[in-house]
Length: 502
Image (cartoon, rainbow, N blue to C red; front, side, top):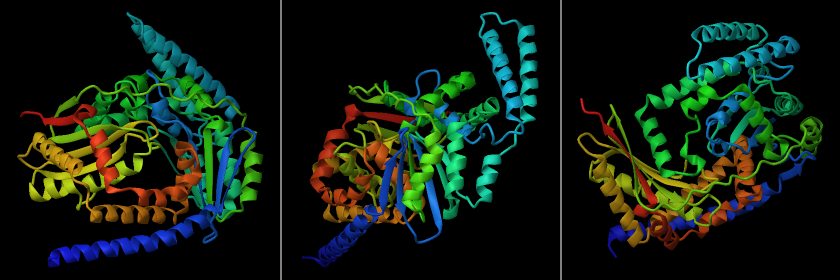
């Protein structure tokens, strides 16, 4: 055995030894953490998951609405994101100086907007009528604004110590996040339940304009944004993953105030909401207050599951964007949802072949061949609740092409199909992944997010605590098998930015 081989063997033994020791310790920690969790489903169907963590007098709060852009149908793309914005606009008592008076103006505003929209959509709109309605609409907008208390929700929660108030919308979900001193538990219950019980989507038209500008600046003027949008549209011909979370501009321009109200009624019923509270709290007190405050929200039917499934792809697809940009390559291969048994092996595959500066495509394209300045691989794009993509990308170096990057990526894919990944690569992946998972569990906020995610997407929050064991079970044969199963030419979409000729 050469000295180099001996060093590699010793390094592998060290990784394995650390992995075995950390797995035993982590297993004990997982069992202890699982025992700190209790759950309760309210009579109206809303579920609360509570984890006691008494290390510091703080708590994190996470509400997971099981609705994202995948639930949007043609004509209302982007509405999930709009609703996320509108959820901070207040209630019948928060964010207003006089709701009774404001409500009358808001109703009249909607009526005028409907008349304006119908007139503008005529084959031959009456220009004078359009001008008159626009003037009336602007007048009512100004009148409605007189009743608004700007940012009252944000001001209140920040005054109570919440520096992490946030929300975001994805393809799969809409999530609302707070972190507060533990003694503000009832404050959070009161103010948050009111947002779901008595929402007022004030300043809707103004906020819709903000989101349209967000689309213009963040996607339509960005070559990479155009490439991702077009690549998704080509990769998914049936499933709603084919459109971006921000939505299509024509839909944003036409979504009505009533559309948002109807969408809220359908997808924000208690049976479609899951909450996690993690921190210095008493679970029984959380459940008592949850019943008192959130229990007031009327129950409703759980939304029907998404019907559409992406059909089998019959051949390689291509998407090309011409722009003033350097060339960029993205390659997406269809893969099953996160619940599939192959998910762990696909995660290991993505990590070994394309994540980090020691990954295979970085070593090949960036270091050895100097063909790219950046490369990478994402497992689970644009979401993971439904069948999705494992995505490779490359930004070619100066005077290099996307075709050269694709050829080199294909070469690495073929190598991983024919030769098992090394024990060192697999051990490194497992150690890093387990370390990252354990690290997340030290954070109240991350733990709350993980508990809601696993409960909604995976089906049970308890599955979170099986992850370390699942990672350990992944073999080199598993990685090789999923590469041969999913990374095939007929299963992929190749997207490319072609630099615009000067």
